Image (cartoon, rainbow, N blue to C red):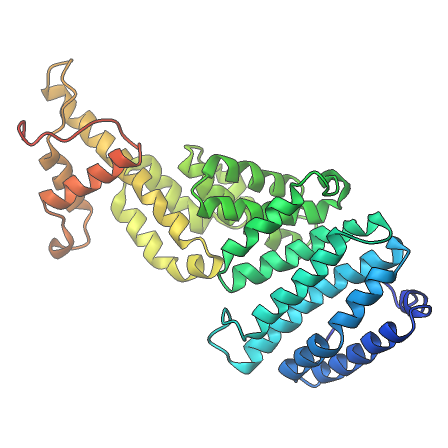
Length: 362
């Protein structure tokens, strides 16, 4: 129910045999929390370990001379703290996970103290190698309670001059870190940078054929990477979608973006709304609507262009409004000319198209 904090069973006695009182306090809290978790008492398990085990462990970590012993234990502590707090929050049925008095918020403060100790060790400097796993646990926590503003200091710390060389961390940790920083950049609308980070995560993730877990992790990365690349004008290949079992999710969206079929886009978004909300990609997928509208506007222009002089690049918005009405699911949903103008203004504002609207030439 609650995994051991030692990388192997034989490590625990060696790691804590010379640590004295702090190790005894930590191990006692660990044993009590593990017993409570095994019985399903997750809130009590977290409360016990957070109150009685974390600070003794931090003090033990501070005094530990051997990074080879301290780092694996700290890495497991960070992972278990988040997992235990998350299960405790779900078991208690709390609807306010981001509240200051919630267990997840409390776990965030505990993880922050762990990170501060690992980032500025008083003894063996190699203990900094525990930092990235702590940051990943904090990313998971902050994303789960929607407090993304707290992640900025973590990113700045890992980019600081006194931070360990990023390439010295294990590939699995580097890939996970880039996945979360890529998601952060998506929320900041920095899509080109987000694509670099997410592509890095995908390159360093195990192949989908290796295991079911590897396939699930690659699908998580692709759930963000594919729409980001589509927003940048790069469509995913059918082989990529089929290989990862995502052709039903992104295949219709890809075709809608290429053809400008707004009705097809609306239908697939309605069918996949729940799954995208669960993945946290709903707003990102909605951004693709402007891509579909731009393609539709272009196709309307191509259809009407033969009736205009070669040097005339004007477009009667009534033609665009009629095309939008054809894509509507019912007459009640058909947009009027003012709504069509608003859509075009949005496309111009977001630099999806170049132009202006002239009411004098209407």
